[in-house]
Image 1 (cartoon, helix red, strand yellow):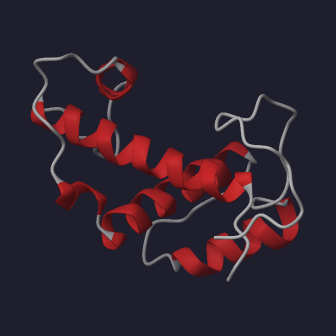
Image 2 (tube, helix red, strand yellow):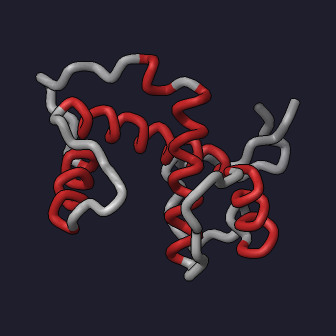
Length: 129
């Protein structure tokens, strides 16, 4: 079995959150596009981060396919790269290459700040999945 640490689960949870939030924003007719105004981006973010209500329609399983989650991972990588001051040029971008650069040069998969474990799991060396 392969060991998955808390950081890996946090990445997966973040991707699930992005997928669910993106779906909710799209249900409200909010879709991101290049050149969006700050106000439009703020509306999308507010819809994505709004607490779930009891009358919200369930997010369909299709929002969580491997392809959908990889797409969210690619978007997160581009956002991280830009936040690090890297320039992402328009055109075909190899998401795997970008993730490799972020991982090897910037510790994308390993660097973390001190925080409370959102899963409240014991830290045992033999945790496996």
